[in-house]
Amino acid sequence: MMMRIGHGYDVHRLKEGRKLILGGVDIPYEMGLDGHSDADVLVHAVMDSLLGALALGDIGKHFPDTDPAYKGADSIELLKSVGGIIASQGYKVGNIDSTICAQRPKLSPHIENMRRNIASALSIDISQVSVKATTEEKLGFTGEGLGMSATAVCLLIDA
View: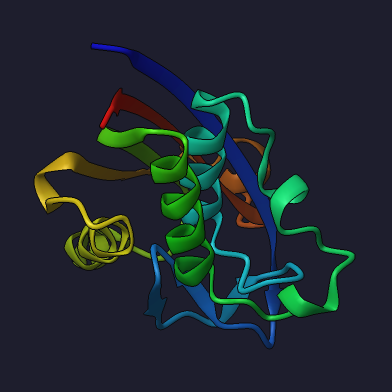
C-alpha cells in the first residue's frame, strides 16, 4: 500500500463587514476573514495538505486569487474539486487532522458541523476528519484578535 502525508497552513486577517466561514460553517461573529474567496482558513489548510501530499502545489496554483472566477468562492466547493484531483491521481483520504488558532469566538459548538462539511465534500466518513480549535493565550496576531490561522495534516492512501 502506498501512503502519502501532507501538511497545510493558512492564515487570514480578520476584517469587519465579512462573514466568518470556518469549515463551511457560517459562524456568528462581528468580523470575518479577509480574502479573495470566502477566506475559510480551515478548508484552505486542509486543501493545501491534500495537494501537498501528492506534490501538486498549493491552492494558489489551482485556484489563483488573480482569477475572477474564484472571487467570493465557496471553499467547500473548491475542496470537492481537490477531492476529484486526489481521486484522479489514484489516491483516497485516510484521515485529516486539523487545528484552528483563534482567540475568539468560541468554536467548540461548531466543530461537529465543520467535520461533517469537510467529510461530505471529500466523500469520506466523519470519523476520518479531526478538527480542533485553540487560542494562543493572547499572544501573536491570532491572540491579539487580528487574524486566524489553521494547520492540517493528512494521510492519503492508494485507492
